[in-house]
Length: 442
Image (tube, one colour):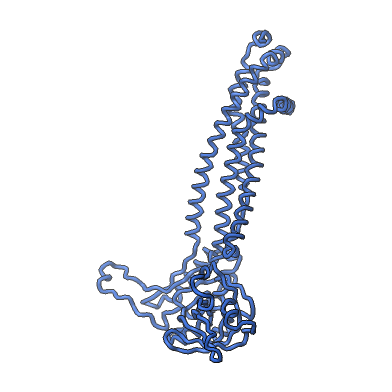
């Protein structure tokens, strides 16, 4: 009987195609709107999470800070202490930390700005290049997502040996060396403070406008400054600073590491190492709280806007109820014949409830297909815009467009629920008809 009612409902819907389509229009618009909005919201959330992870979401930041007084009375006499060599995080500490948690931590990403300068060609005074000399660990290259064009990256041996090697930008190499291979060449940098340092070029990286900023076209190409990367320990040595350790740093995590667990392990390690240091301690943190807050805001906005869009389901449900009342009026004689032949009232009621459910269900399926299709098109449009208008950011933005499976299932459920809710009254009205009145209806 149930499947027979479904068959009858489909026949009734197909016999009035245009009227059925117009009846389902409110359901289609409501469901497709919800799917599109949830797809956009979920895609923004997934894209943001994936992009943030690629830009540092899988890192733990650490910094050395003073131990502040616990009692308010001590603040009047407290003076921020000067840092000594023993207060910095040493490379030995990092090596021990990595050895202790090899499945969580890859290494340290840190940098130390040495200053601006100019590379001068002794053989040609018109040939020069402006640079900003920046000391960094090899892992900093990975953290910054720099891509090598030629040669190699800085290595651990370069850093520990405080070697005078450098990696330069491709734009600088092109302008300064021309067609000559820069790898292995020695460059002399005259710093702004008058110091002169020689470095051997071991690598060339691709200039990234998203990282370093768009090219300043108001300055001629020859005068534009680019970053020259040298080992961070070399920069410490050249500065004459009485330190070889790090004050601010990022720890790169392995791909499968749990960020929160790694942060806790790192914090516990430094708490133990610095337990006897009365002036300073290390604080470890990650981006998860900020990302969680952003995701919460996006979820609230998505749910709120989806709720507004779902109001059209009520409008669609009213349309279903209206058409079902019209349909019952048109089929009054048919209802009377069925009841005269022995059909029970609950059978009549079930027939029209199922017909209302089928109307809403078909409308819901069409709405889902439209919503998924439009969501996919919007995703492709976003990828096209990023690739063509913001190409410098294309390597950093990881687009993830996908419809929400939960939203699809809920949409199907609520479309059927709409059919039950708005179809019951007309169906119940049909089941309460008197047989003789129904048979005499013209």
